[in-house]
Image (cartoon, rainbow, N blue to C red; front, side, top):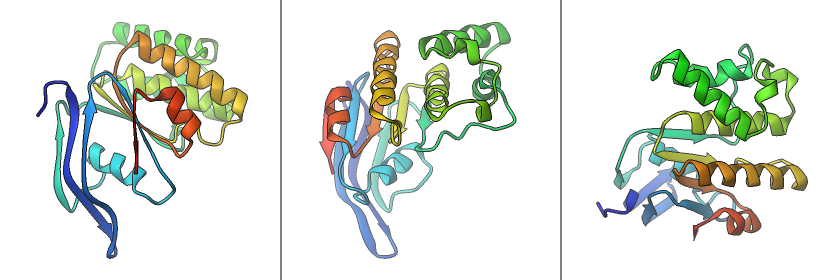
Length: 199
């Protein structure tokens, strides 16, 4: 595996019911960069993230990871409705750290996404944009090397999308991670991507 690579994809193939989605795909994902994968609907972007994360298995080829610690932001927020904002983030942290460290990290990332004052609210009390911010805070609070993001700003109005993208870039500059972000929006790709691949 190349020294500066977090992920290497080698001759990756995946089909569903005889329909080839990915065919002999080769890709190097550099450490601490934001790699954006774009392309039309149905071209295999989400499938690729699922294979990298281990949610799905490739038909053939190899996925080489420098480290198996992965955070995943899905298209939908996937917050647990019976837990507060704080508890939703704590849920993924409690097995890996003590309460003092957990409190510090949760407060740090909620402050970065401007939601600290909403930490005791439940998902039903949040707007769609606020839920997306919680998902971003949760993903960064978990100490992963690799962050997978599947259309994380989809469905947001332009003003809110711009605000959340700015916050995301601020967090990434503060706390470098290797990011693979899927989008069909080329403007979004150009703003966010250090490297852009089109499928």
